[in-house]
Structure formats: C-alpha cells, structure tokens
Image: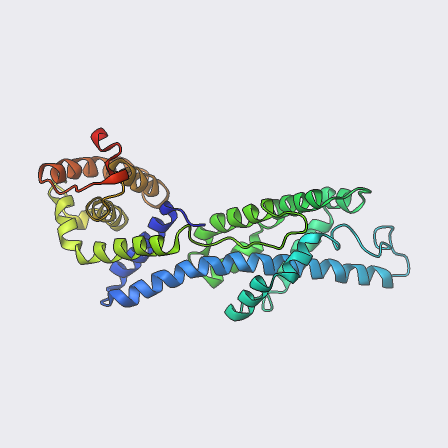
Amino acid sequence: MLNRRQLRIKVMQALYGFFQSGEDSIQTAENKLFHSIDRIYDLYLLQFALLSEIHKESLKDREIGKEKFFPTEEEKMETTPFTENPFFKLIDESEELQKSLERKKLSWANNEEAATNVFKKLKTSAAYKEYINTSETSFDKDIDFITRFYKKFICDEELLVSFYEEQNIHWNDDIDLVNYLFIKTLKDLRHNKPLQLKSLYKDQADDMDFIKTLFRKTIIRNEELESYITDNTKNWEAERIALMDLILMKMAICELLEFPSIPVKVSLNEYIEISKSFSTPKSSNFINGILDKVVVVLKNKNLLKKSGRGLVDNSNK
C-alpha cells in the first residue's frame, strides 16, 4: 500500500506537470493525478499476469521437450515442481485478480517475448535446476522459490524496464513500490488459502482527501506560498530557484498550514528526504534552511494550528 511519502511524491509529480504545462483546469489536473495513482495498481496486477505467462512458457517447454528425438533427462519430465507450483493455481483461481485484469484490459499480449525471455533465463539458472530436481517440496518451499525467482529475474529485468517506460512515464518510479507489494503478497500466502491482493491505499478515504487537499491547496495558495519562500531567500528571486525545489517548498508550507494533525518535524523531514531523490545534490540543505525560517515566521504569526498528533515534536523546530 502507498505510504504518505509516496503520496507526496505523486502529488509533487502532478504539480510539476501542472506548472510546467500551464494547465488552467485544476479539476483536469487532479483527475490526471488520481489516474496516475490508479495506474500503479495496474502495474501490480500486470506482475501477476506476467508470472502466469511465464508459467505457460514452462508448460510449452514441457511439450517441446516431449517431441525431441533425444530429450535430456530434464526434458523427459512430464511435470516439474515449477509447472506444478501452487502459486500459479492461486493466480488462475483468483476471481478478483482475473476480473480486474479483464476489466482493465491488462495483459502481455503485445509483449509476449517478455515471458519467453524471462523463462529462458530462469531455465538456465542453477537455482531452477536445483528446484526442479528436488525430491521434497512443500507449500512454503514452493512460494519461497517464486519469491527468490521474482527478486532475481523480474525486479531487475531490463526488457521489463523498457516496457514500463513505454507504457507510463512514472512506472519506473513506481516499480520499487509495486515489487514491495508483490513480494509482501507472496510472503502473506498461506496453504489452502486463496490469493489476497493488497490494497493500494491504507485508508482510501483519508489518503484520497490528503492527496486532493495537498494538490488543490498548493495551487490555490500558490502566490501566498511563494511569498513565504521569496521573503526568506536573500538575494534570490523565485525565477532563480529550481522549479522542483520551489514546488517541494510550497508543498511543505501548504502541509504545515493545511494539516493540523501532521507534526511540523514530520512535514519538514519528508520534503527534505524527497528532495534528495528528485532534486539537485545541494537542494536538501537549501530547502531545509528556507523551511526552518518559514516555520519561525508562521509561529510568530500564530498560523501553525496543530492539534492531536500534530502537536508532537513541534517544540523541536
């Protein structure tokens, strides 16, 4: 599920696109934002579809082996622990998964070589050979193999990365989260229990309200938020500050003002950490310095209205 930092990043990306494009309609931009978040779940579902296609490749491989004049001992095997791995049956039997894939029209039909190439790499690996020749299997061991296989042959597969780039410009930013969700799904599987898909949100109503408020208010209060920044940057005009840094600081100030339940320290730390991944090497120190000054101004003006959990650690700033 998406945590608050990941939600902030999605809002940041949407705001960057909004300010760069000169978009006039907040509603249109907001719809695009929520669509981009929904697409994260599409990527999660696609990973199951990919594993299903890889399983089909393994079944084809059994059939091809049977037709050879001089099959290897491996090719003579009617089935293998991989073809019989219970995870694939769980995928096939999950009505929720199958209906979601069908409803969203998600498949690998236009990229069939992905499953083929991944299975070829898997088949030549020592781990695969050891697994299919094992004499003892169990549900836990089977799922453990799928987990190790996924980490090694799916997470870092270059062909898949290229496919994700073509499908959605943000998917390469989202794939680490999706891989985490997928592996968490595998670890939570239990014998004789159906596949339980993870939810995208921890608390959908609360998280969607957080996204909408942060996105809309940062745009609506844009000039006010920018004034807090320019008033505290000596010899700097807004035009000289990197757009990403400007957006992150506006979001941080907006969050300080609009969300009473979020502690000041949490808001500041989140945006400083995000800047380390999405802005310049010196941005985090710059943003930290400016936001510290803005917090003092807001306190002096009695504009930091914190309550409940939001009161925690406010004295540290």
